[in-house]
Image (cartoon, rainbow over all chains, first blue to last red; front, top):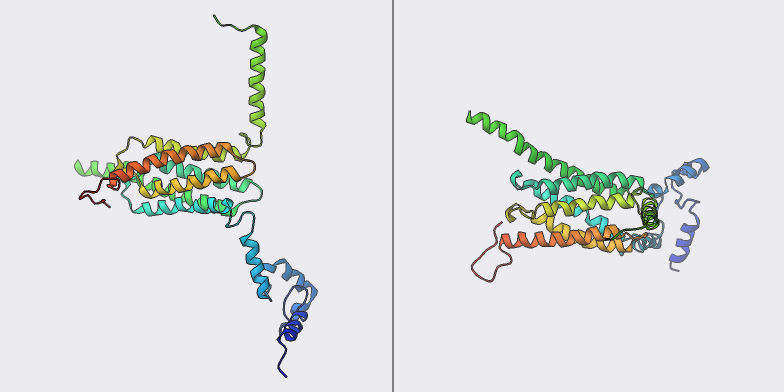
Length: 160
Length: 123
């Protein structure tokens, strides 16, 4: 008689303990304190025992009210484009950089970084993208200032 | 000569002050982040307007192109977010206009918007 796959799956499922871990040789994991500690770190330690659990988690993310089907996801995500464009402009000669634009990028980055920590809930995604903007803006400003104000001294010294 | 009676003057002052007070205390007013975030984004508009007179070789095609897409997305975001943020919407609508103008200046300077002649865009 062939092995009944449904029955063995049910057996395996029934053998899982409270936090969804399958019994392994590490039977200490069955101790209540360890279970409680593991439950607090559940996203990192839980095994997804079912393929349906995995797909339902993905589905939850896909259908999230601030998920990839909504503008609440794509507007902050595209903000990375500003930092990437600035990084692409690292190769530009400093004479071609624009003080007002880089100053606006830096100021926006600093103000939004601060306010993304003040709103509830804290938005780490927004924080990181604005920190990157402020960082690239500051670097571009430093390149242009160094070129405009410190190279002049060198060229003046050479002329003399 | 147009003049107001004392009553009318006091009434208009009262109306103005109450409007100002409601603005100060509103959920999208200057005491909240919903205000200062968009104010920071007006910096992009000011920067682009300051760059109107610059020669097109000094403009950054990367940054201007990204700004155009970014402002379009943020206009939609400002409309859909709750509370609806009209200040952010106005900011990004004007940024979109200004950035599209700068993009057209840059593209013309690069040779993209020429008639079909023997012109090639410079890098």
